[in-house]
Structure formats: C-alpha cells, structure tokens
Image 1 (cartoon, one colour):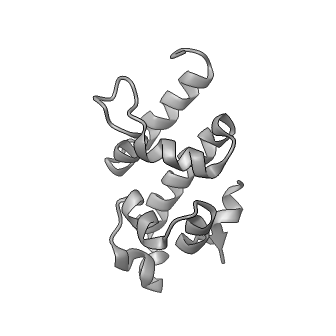
Image 2: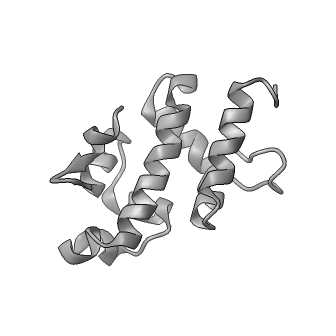
Length: 116
C-alpha cells in the first residue's frame, strides 16, 4: 500500500489504516501507543504526536509488506514477531519506545542478507 492510501485530507486516518488491516481504530491506537481520544477527537488526530506515531507504524508495515505479501500479514509480524538482537521485543514495542530507526535499519539489514 502507498502511504497516501492510509491518509485523508493530508493526515494519516486511523479509520483507513484500520480498514486496510482488518481491525478497529481503537486497536490501531493501542498498536501505535496512543490513547482512544487521540484517534477519536479531530484536534488530536491531527496532532504532531499522533501523526508521528501513525506514520512510524505505517512506515514499518509498508517496508515489510513485500516480504509477506499483504498488509495484514505484515501487521501481524509487526505486532507479534520478536526481533533477534532486541531482547525479545517486537517491532511494535520498539516503535512505541521511539526506536523506529532501529527497526527500519534491522529490516534493511535483513533485506540485504545480513541476518539471514
């Protein structure tokens, strides 16, 4: 999926993300480390923090989607697969800790064959 397919009116739209991933907006919020009101109140959906968290989550899912063949399977990987070298943390946990660059670097390294 392209990033634009997750957006509406120039911002990431939790409902569009949820529809693509066959889940709820509330689950998207939890996955991104956000509270319910961050995705329910219009002023909060557009906030820098909310948009950054949604962008980071979508960025990682989009990066691994070609490997898994669908956004749904990429989302399952993001939420549940412990990453070697990160003390059993998942991509979701690392992103929620503000470590998205480390996750993206790990994915790039795997794609380059470093961790095969």
